[in-house]
Amino acid sequence: MIAQQLVNGLMLGAIYVMVAVSFTLFFGCLNFLNFSVPALFMLGGFLTWALVQMGLPWVLAVVGALAAAALASLVVERLTWRIQRGGPPLIPLVSSLGFLILFENLVLVRWGSDARSIPSPFGDANIRIGEVVVGIPQLACLVVAIGLVFGLQFLLARSKLGRGIRSVAESPETAAILGVEVNKVVPRLFLLAGLFCALAGVMFSLSYQLVSPFMGDQVALKGLAAMVLGGMGNVWGAVIGGLIIGVVEVFAISGLSADHVNVVVYGLLLAVLIIRPTGLFGDAALGQQKL
Amino acid sequence: MLEAAHLSAAYGPVRALDDVSLTVGQGEVMAVLGANGAGKSTLLRTLLGLMPGAGGSVRFLGEDITKLSAPERVRRGLVLVPEGRRVLTSLTVEENLLMGAYTRRDTPGQAELDAIYDRFSNLAARRHMKAGVLSGGEQQMLAIGRAMMAKPKLIMLDEPSLGLSPRLTAEVFALIASLNAEGMSILLVEQNALLALEASRQALVLELGRAVVAGPSAELLKDDRVRGAYLGAAA
Image 1 (cartoon, one colour):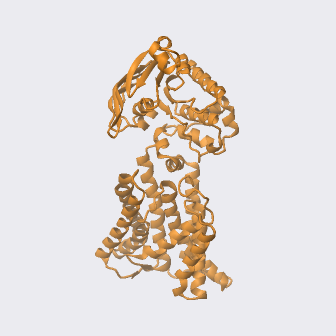
Image 2 (spheres, each protein chain N blue to C red):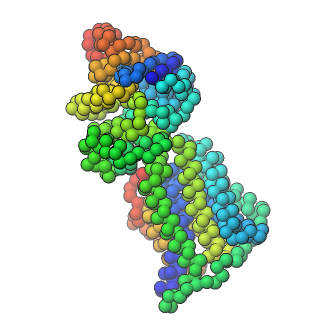
């Protein structure tokens, strides 16, 4: 029973990991708390449903939803980050909050506010390991999430784009002197981080088979909590934070009740922050120079 | 090889550079002297294309680069070693060197890195350490090595001796001399006027964004105005 809950928690945590990593990319590289992340998550999940409704095959629907979310992320880059760079950091934050509301309500206007159930292409496929039942889609999400985080870390650590991103993260001015086109590197980062959370949205909709225009809010809030729990700006911190929150959430539901989930999760977050204000893996210097 | 005409630049309403022209010949060292705030760093930033709204024209290797972006200028071999070194402290020494080659279309090979390490043995031992742990002198060497990774034709050095001990300053100037001996053209901004004049063939003195004296360095060394203002001699 405990093993089953642990497995369920880790699989839910995989979704939070993806969202937390997305927040972390924006925050760690650009010092930008991008509040449009929940909307990008929702666009990934919701548009997958919408495109399947329109008769597209699954794979194309997922690709289309990811493309739309990527485009939305680039719009946010162009209209918040690029225009407001160098100004007070709160302004892009508030603009990105505006985009969150805009994107959610555009979807609301077109498709209504009802939660829609989305049929899973995998059916109820699962495997049994002893007593533990593991859903195939959820397992796939966990594997994909962890694989992508490793891929991302490799990209950041080893590739030319990764070095460019880290240079811009440390000092846009120095990067410019070296000939880095900041206005090309930053959109790529928005693309990457946007795809991460949009893919999380797709995973969520395929695993839990429910989408709505506001599906991103609760999940992204937990993703944000996962980032803070792990230590802001640290990718591995986001991974550990996401898994912890997933597991705690599942145990809170089974041990107490669904009503207790947020009390337990955010209570834990507050408790950790009181003991370690920089999160589990953060150090004193918040934000930049963490990747 | 570098010809700039009638350069002007401003920070908002504050004019930092006013009608400055200069020519750096192939294989030549040119020094730019001046007090703090005279516009020396602004001149280099303007030449690199980092000053929005700058006026005037810049030709490099016979090509008009006035409208080119900084990355395009770096790719053509016009490279800046900025004031205060500006190494990327969260990247390793080797990653800093690779960042120097960022605008290149080819990938720098190990042989190129090894050539830099041969020249700067301190960097070789620390190649996988974060650049933030280097001493000031080592950071200056890294900044110069990083510039060399761009395959430069002309290196602009902004205050390379700033904050360095006399011994390290001498090392930096020996390095400048050896780079120049290998055929590198150099535009040197330096507060230490005596060292700069001795290391250069031509020199330019900036005051409040304007070029007030220009000519062969040997003559500037004897110029009473220069001696009084920058060499600490009685006018």
